[in-house]
Each structure stands twice: as structure tokens, then as C-alpha cells.
Image 1: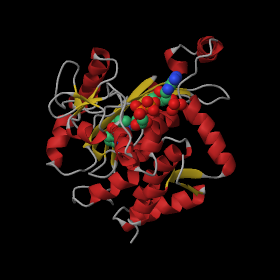
Image 2: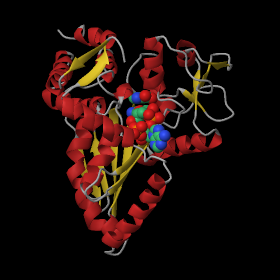
Image 3: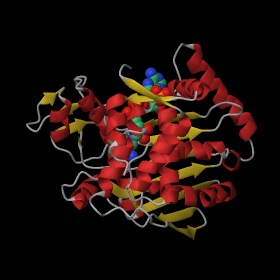
Image 4: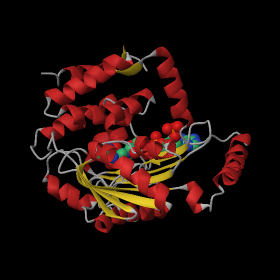
Length: 338
Ligand code: NDP
Ligand code: PYC
């Protein structure tokens, strides 16, 4: 990358926390948000790293986010945790509910956490990796705003709806993937627009329903799902599981609630955790070896596991104690300090 600025990890943390607190977030929200933003920046996940501070602070301007909301955690059933984010960003609710989700999963083999009434802007892999760090497998899903056309359609109905999964591995980074069910995440399109770069073909259509590679036209038109009808079906599943199933909003309802304001989406999130030991009847170690055979067979062919790029970026950035962002983004972030 050219015209970039390099920040130490401590400088990046200080920048993020101070911007958030200057713009109305309490210290505990600022810390939870910064933990995830910094984890992304450290792993070179640029669309959900420091760039997302723009979305957090811009959303604050419209007065609907409660920057000092205290999440309410409810032990709803033997395998169900409910977390009411009370109009705050999702991440503090996730942090507060995680210990009970882990406890229930280890007791019952499977448990779900439903986070309700949250503003949501973040990547999901840090959440499922917290589960795999506790020896569990995890799955997380959220809707967003109705920016994405269903396969065969011509207008935004679905969200960019990410799906994340993590599987614990002994002495190694977990097997994790986390992707939008749209061809591109919205954040990625925003980065193309900021850089003045054309999008690849097949990512979006314009207001008239015609294919476009112009990021601005794409944002005014509709994004496309990955894998045609297959990604579209997965995206609809996410709308249902993280929406009506948990008594929260779909992407279309979230967009309607924003009433035209460029806010972070407001909805729910579902996280499902699995205990490999209880679900395998106490045979997790033997079955772990079988999972490793699967991974080895993939790597042996020269294919890579998802998240490998990310783990390499983390190692590199931790070793040099640095993250790198465009100078233009840095300037925009400095302007948010008060
Ligand atoms: P990417 O397309 O960048 O990556 C998707 C996943 O595929 C990653 O796990 C990636 O691993 C892996 N991958 C990429 N290339 C390969 C390959 N050649 N072989 C094997 N695996 C590969 O993700 P998106 O742009 O779709 O999403 C980016 C982020 O945006 C996600 O973290 C998501 O949670 C977030 N998001 C959040 C939303 C929200 O509403 N909160 C909405 C939409 C997206 P690696 O990272 O190592 O390349
Ligand atoms: O990149 O699609 C996206 C996104 C939506 C909300 C947060 N990120």
C-alpha cells in the first residue's frame, strides 16, 4: 500500500478509544469496540478495522445509539442465553454474555446466545474464535441493511449477512471462516469507493438493475449474493435465524428503522456453540485427529485453509508492533477527535 501511515498497536488503541469516548461512547463500550477493531486491523482485515470508527461515530450523530447502554443478560433456558444490548453496540453484550454461553455449552453440549436490540458494525470471527479458545466450535450470524438483491431479483431485500464458524485445534490457530453472503461486504465496496477503484464484474447492479463496476452506483443500486441462488438461500436463512427466530429485525426492517439515516444496522445476532466432547460422547480427542486428517488433506493439495492469510498478517504485525492504514483514513479519523 502506498501513502500509508504506520501506527504502533498502542497508538492504534489510543486513537480508537479516544475517538469513541470523544463521540459519546462510555469507557467500557470504547474498550469492547476497540478490542474487535484492533483485532481486525492487526489481521489486515481492513474493511472492519479502524475504518469502522467512521460508521460508529457517524451513527452516534442520529441519536439512536445508546453509547453508555448496560447490557442485560438473562439465563432464559438450560441452553439459551438472551442478551439485551439496550440500544448499544453489540460487542459489550457479547462480552457480558460469553461466560454463561460457554458454561451452558459445556453442560448441555449445545447452547445459543441471542443478542437483541443492538447496533452492529463488526466482523464476527473474533466472536467465534472466543468460543474455539474455550475448546468449543461456534457459529455466528447477523443480518444488516437491505442492500443485497436475492438471486433473480433486482432490489435490496437481504443484508450482507455474514456467517462465521470456528473449530478449535490443539496447539494451532482454530479453523475459522467468516464471510459476507454478498459477493463483497458493504465495507469493502466503501473502501473501493474511497480509493476510486472500479469493482470487479458481478458484485453489484445499479439503480436501473444493470450490472455496474462503479462503487458509487453499486451503493445506490443493489449488491449481489455470492454463489447465485446458493448464497441467496444462506442469506435468507440468516435473516430468519438472526431475525424472527430470536424476536428481532430483518435487514429490511433495520433499514426502515434507520429512516434514511446512514446509521449502523440495528437488529439481533445469534451465536450457537457446540461442545465437541459432549456431542461425540467423550471421544473429542480421537475425533480431533480425524478433523486434523481432513485439514492435512486440504493443505497437502496446495489449497489453503480460510484465515491463514489473517494469521500470517497477525504474526507479521505483532512482530513489528505496527498496523498500517491509508493516510486519508488517518486524516479522517484525526478529525473525529474533540
Ligand atoms: P473475505 O471475502 O475477505 O473472506 C472470507 C473468508 O474466506 C475469510 O475467512 C478468508 O480467510 C477466507 N478466504 C479468502 N480467500 C480464501 C482462499 N483462497 N482459500 C481459503 N479461504 C479463503 O470476507 P468478506 O469480505 O465477505 O467479509 C469481511 C468481514 O466483513 C467479515 O469478517 C464479516 O464478518 C464482516 N461483515 C460484517 C457484517 C456485519 O453486518 N456486521 C456484514 C458483512 C460482513 P482470510 O481472512 O485468511 O483471507
Ligand atoms: O461490511 O457489509 C458490511 C457491514 C455491514 C455492517 C457492518 N459491516
